[in-house]
Length: 334
Image 1 (cartoon, rainbow, N blue to C red):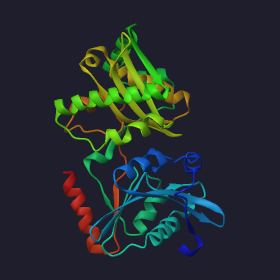
Image 2: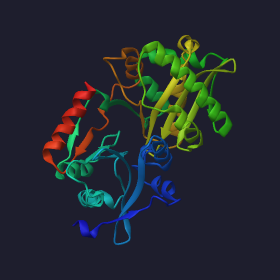
Image 3: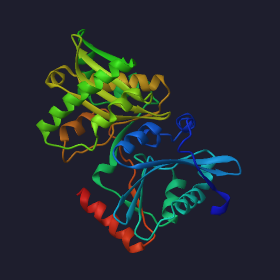
Image 4: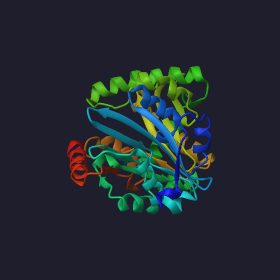
């Protein structure tokens, strides 16, 4: 089976993003921009296409890092399967594993950040991958197929009240930023606000803002929205956009935003924009009802559709190492 699927290194291909984003399952984490970011953090990043008789079945971007004798491989965004590849998911994964030439102590992790199609799940299970599910692997999704009036009518009354409050303030404006210099400035504003938020709430983030700054500002699949009060930014929201799903990525605000309903206005304007551009779902980017109840209640007031966004799948040739790594990942998350 694996001999029929060729693995073609496309790490130097300039059209990687152009081809990738034609696929319904394309996502930020499989994009070259994210690959450049992870390269800056010390990962070796490669892109491969899996091909059968001249037809592409999948696109995979993977990251490698060595720690002593151990090689760690991470596939963020999962395998982006084409329509034809959906029916060959097991063969695609087998060919990719063969391509990696894993040694017994090497670890492979696949993280999709989204609910997976049944064929993809079957392929992972068939090859002995171990799923690790934690509280962080859950989010809230909003169905965007109804019209905006229906979406608002289905929301909690307090959410409707906040939308009316925010939209009724003439000095509160929502601005989508397209100019590169404006996006850089907005990212810097986000960084300052986010740092203050981290200090106030005492949480950490894995995002290296200095390494990501120029890449984020130039990424056409990242939407930058600024909420301004009297022309001054009080909230910055960054959303990554795909054909079917728009996902809340990062947001930060100052103290003025809380009393104005700026967060509600930001989400509502993004929902309107996502529907206009044909997206069918909005992903709130995670939930944490135990650790951040206020934000969870804000999200749940618009949608109560809490879903599992996808586990981390762990693989190693050695079954004991595979189970040990999965257990260690689970224990680290609790």
